[in-house]
Image 1: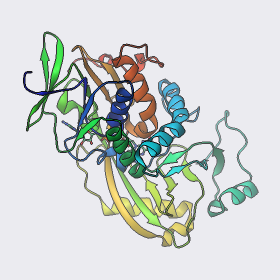
Image 2: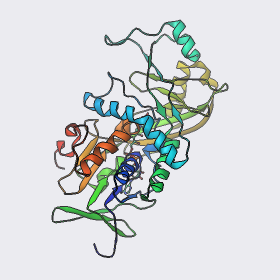
Image 3: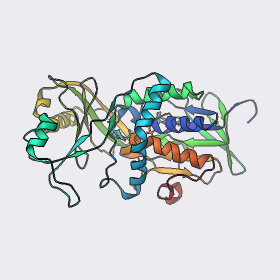
Image 4: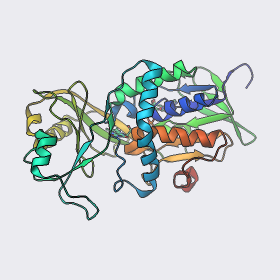
Length: 355
Ligand SMILES: Cc1cc2nc3c(=O)[nH]c(=O)nc-3n(C[C@H](O)[C@H](O)[C@H](O)COP(=O)(O)OP(=O)(O)OC[C@H]3O[C@@H](n4cnc5c(N)ncnc54)[C@H](O)[C@@H]3O)c2cc1C
């Protein structure tokens, strides 16, 4: 491609996965350009609750090593983003209370009523079993701007309103990308387009999985000190620094539809109030939806493709915020020719038959 701007690496998609990877590549000395068809971070990455659920016994077993590594990396990841950007990130480190109808054999003894009442008075009287888990949470609406600004400060480039409409290839290798406005050249291109990744590369079987969320402002703040979640994660309450409580979420196969259904929001609010009665009177601050990048086996799709220099990192489904730092690290290892610190075999794109 003559006469076009050239970079070492182009990242299609400026969500948390794309921006984190761009930052990591930039820190390793590559020139990088992130292209987002909308505003970077405006899709799943700021719709998410930001729980960093990495505990041993939950989630697909193949994910555990990546999840554990990413959870360990998170405090430094946040600190670096804050230092580089000057943006204060709402990083919640008080831990979580996990509630379940019954204990698993591997569970430690549940909290006694007195212990629970002392830790989280708003949950006193629940009939569910409660366990304290050392899990952090982050408000992605503060993390994303910090990451985007960090990337700019590090000399990375990021363009909003630039949709990748085609990936250029020649002699089996990638040559760059085309947007409706122009073309860019690079010998490395990474598809980080989240739920839309198949639009850029039809062979990537990512799909949207919708989630409804709402934010409540309780009459008395702070109402909760800990993240509170049911074990299967279909209901969770995540306190933010300013007193808001994010409540989630649904898991819906609804294509790319993002409309907010008032009845669904009402049901979520009611379930939150069933768990914490004070939330019944809480003010509804906001309701929204987001599209998680799903994959057929609920595992991320990460690795090289059959085209030399063309990589993919998507399909992080319900854990993309948690998994961002470790994904950036292992993908950057792969892209720069190092052995990834975690084996990528369970995540490689070629595990799916060609479509
Ligand atoms: C309701 C909800 C709750 C969640 N809760 C949690 C949680 O508690 N913890 C957790 O870890 N994760 C959670 N997640 C999941 C997490 O948010 C996602 O896994 C993560 O944000 C995915 O990041 P991404 O960068 O792959 O996708 P996205 O953030 O969706 O980014 C993809 C980007 O690609 C851009 N794009 C698309 N097509 C193109 C194109 N052709 N050219 C250029 N750009 C393009 C889009 O504009 C978008 O900005 C939740 C998600 C939802 C929806």
